[in-house]
Image (cartoon, helix red, strand yellow):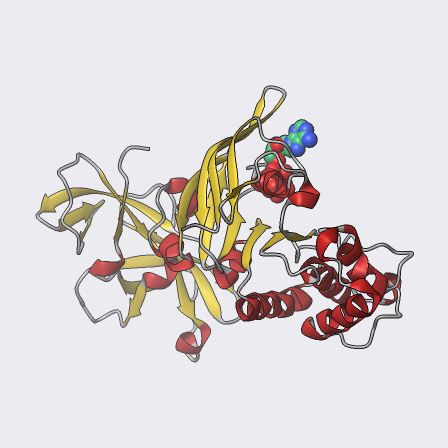
Length: 359
Ligand code: ATP
């Protein structure tokens, strides 16, 4: 049974539809990430689950209880916002203890119990002994760890994270995302996080929900979403890629402009087939080799990305955008690729991923 179930949830702001009949089911202990461009409705969905926004229609069921119309204090969650949202006039200890006394008062632990809980929570987020400090004495990352401790202090069964890392610098963001993931796995707490950062989503989620215009485009594991995007929007939003059109020649052989390539899948007979190829799935060969599915292309531009090079190429494949390939920097060590160079490339049959034809 799902731990959290969203059924046909809709929300309008005036004439604008922010959520359009959203259905989502989250299992106990899952870490699910809502991912999408600005304005797609991620935060509205999170806020509706928290009871901070009232949906126009639809249902929210948490642990078998219909909470669709329950006030926030009667919902069983902890929440962390992008902006830390700590009380600047309260010590760290009082910030963490805040929820213990104000929410679910039937379970309030008493002064001694609360103090111990604060100590435990701060140790849990890797900041033992800072109870007496004030938020302004802490770095952004430390403040967000305190916000996390506060969210978890009441032992909620659902953790809601609204872009918790986006105010932090790049190094702190990477550090905290792995800490949050480890903590979540250790506690086994069902977690829903909002982000517009695809790398964050891919590295943290058990499943990613890709949203656009108040609706869900695809739900899947990071690998599913990255490897087999459901449509052009998801393909475009998650990482770089090449969308190539082809006509069927014979069974699984396709013609891409002047280039013939074999695909692993057997596809229905369409006038035009579309395939998706990730840049890192294009292989580089010596110009004299002729492996299966190989062709030549001319280098237009190279960009050094640190661990890899992005290479923009012109090929006779009939596509309206240049081909983009990605090669590891180690692999290219000692044999730099210059604009104008002719390269022998191949796309292994299994890496030509068919896309839906009618979009
Ligand atoms: P972002 O990453 O920019 O926060 P988001 O996907 O979280 O984007 P939401 O905050 O859910 O998007 O907003 C969805 C849409 O609803 C946006 O176009 C936003 O302007 C609109 N919206 C959100 N809250 C309100 C409100 N209180 N009144 C009017 N419009 C709103």
